[in-house]
Length: 518
Image 1 (cartoon, rainbow, N blue to C red):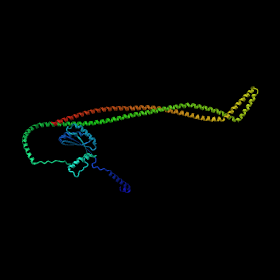
Image 2: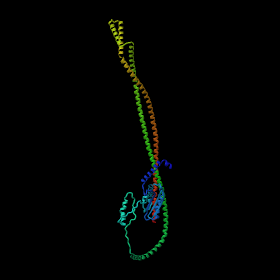
Image 3: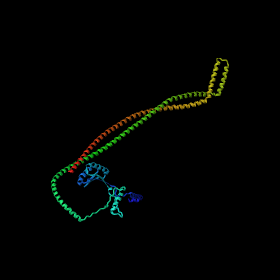
């Protein structure tokens, strides 16, 4: 430790400072209490019985209380103090006993026992021992110019009421107060003279009383045997009465145990009922969850079916569009063939060296030759030449017209080829779309069919699970109703037994009264 302190002085310094700070903070926050609150495991039961001897207090008050209170859980020892006019039972509990709960149990037991106590006995009072019962402040009062009796009266009228009204003051007790008294002193001579007169009168009366006492003594001796016999009978009756009391106390203890067991069964039944209600709530939640899941699955299936219908509509549209596209493509191919034929004719003419100017010259020469032949008389040979000239002129006109439209034909060819490429792309795309739609429709239909199968399976499983749980709930309800009926029957039996015990206590009380009167 010394080596560590030398090697790490800063750590040691910090530890010392922390210890000093904690000590200072603890000292500042520490509260001083002259009488700290202490929970003492003791309860006192005080019962008054005016005019009763200590033996009577023990027999009729303390012993029944000890028997009745001795069954309370947590009691360690029971002590009784029997004096004239009152009796006190001291209950000592174990240290871990809850005194609030113990006080309730003691009060319940006293309420059960109270009808069987003597009629002249007061209501038992339960007192909890506490340090608050001890005086915590002592004050001395003095005042200049006041006599002792005046100061005492001032304390009674002013000081004591003032402190009793203060918050936190339970009680105020005064000590050393004095009261005014009157002292009467008698004249001894007059008292002696008066005593002589009284003695003379008393002697005569005493002689007569002695004679009467002798007669009464004789009668008393005669009555002693009868009294002894009656005392023996009363003792036997008292013993029988005490035995009956003990039997009733034992029966009451057994009844209290049965009540405790009944309360425990009621608590278990309430817990079972709560568990059953919880299970019913969980079952309803499962039903709602199953319905929600099936509704979601049904909604998804409806959406899938709608999607399949949409895909089929798209497929129908695509299949209807494909022939139109192919027909347009055929028309474009036909147009391309015509344009290519015209361009081929133009190219052939250009290859042979023909131009528009040469064609115009040929046409002019042919026209002149035609007009020259037509001026001649018409014969068979001439008609053939004229027809040839006309055919040549028509061919040359068409060729000229074609060559004049060469640029137009090339433009049309480019447009047609572009349109052909676009339509061919559309046809390919449409065919691919149709194929994809067919695959998607097959897949979607498979999913829909699988979803409907899963939905039906889920419905069957949910119905089976919910039906089984519902059956178990019904069985649980039936068992709870049966248990409740048994508890009600046991409660009626306990109430009947309690009535019998109370009747027995009344009978014992009547017997005790008769014994006391005897």
